[in-house]
Length: 246
Image (spheres, rainbow, N blue to C red):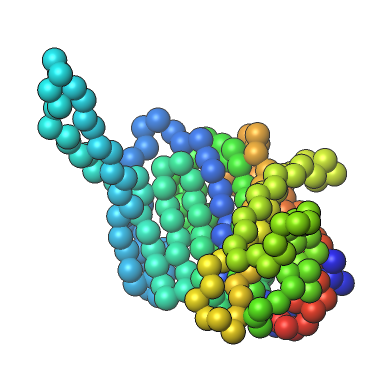
C-alpha cells in the first residue's frame, strides 16, 4: 500500500460522482427541472431531457404481438464540457469529468446545484448518498501488476502468470463510519502495446438514511465518505503508482 498524500496534483481521476438518492413527493413531475437554466448557470449551456426507453412485446395465441416502445422523460441534464448535473425524479447526480481539480471545488458545485434541485422538487427524504471516483492509471507495459497494485490477481502455479485482462469486484462495510464501499479493480484491454491501463473504481456510500434535504449533517457525511474513498485508494496502490501522479 502507498503512503497517503493530502492531494495529488495530477490525480488519475477519469470521473468523479456525487450522488443523492431521494424519496420524491407523489405529485412531482420531471417537467419542473426543464426551467432551471438561470439558477443552474449560463455555463451549463447544454440542457437535455433524460429519457428512458421501455420495449413491450408478447405472444397471443402463438403469434408474436408487434413490439412497442415507450419513451418517457425521467429528468433533465445540464452540461458543460467537464460537468454534468443529472436532475432526476429518483435523485441528483453531479459528474466531474477529467481534468479533475479539487474536492472543495467539485463538492461545492455539486452542493450548490443540489440546493437548486431540492428547492424545485421538495423531496421528502434523502435515502442514500455516495461518492464514486473512477481512476484510470496508465503505466508502462508490459509490467508486473504487483509493482502498481497492492492486491493484484494471485494465480497459483502452473497457471500462466502473464495476465491480459482481469476484473475484481469487492463489497466491504465500514462499521466505524456506518458506510459501505464497492471496489472494482480491472486491467482494461490493451490498445497501446507500450502501455497498460489499470482501473480502480471506488464507490463509497451510505444507505438506509432518512434525512431532510437541508439536513446540516449532509456535508459532514459526504466528507466521511471521501475519507473512506481515499483510504481505499492509497491502500489499493503502491508508492510507485502514486509517485507518477504527484
